[in-house]
Image (cartoon, rainbow, N blue to C red; front, side, top):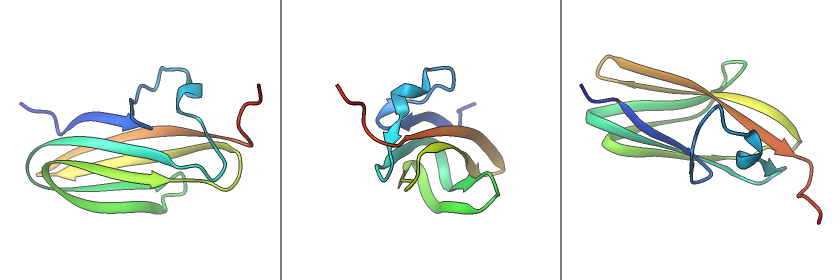
Length: 107
């Protein structure tokens, strides 16, 4: 059986929840690029929602294909968004941690 979600990339790096979050950090107003490589046939409904359940992005993707979304935040802090993919009765969901710095490192 094939997996619906083959790979999740954040800022062009393979996403790993156990990796040091510093690898994925961005400054305020700088885009996070989320890419999801999908496999299978038919159509997939992909969405990104914040912790309150508000849908930030939603798109239907032809399979196999790639869902891509860029998101930025105006203030520093840690955000958690949930990536959800539904296709042909199969469901996938994963929380993604997005760390926003106040300004770039100096030095």
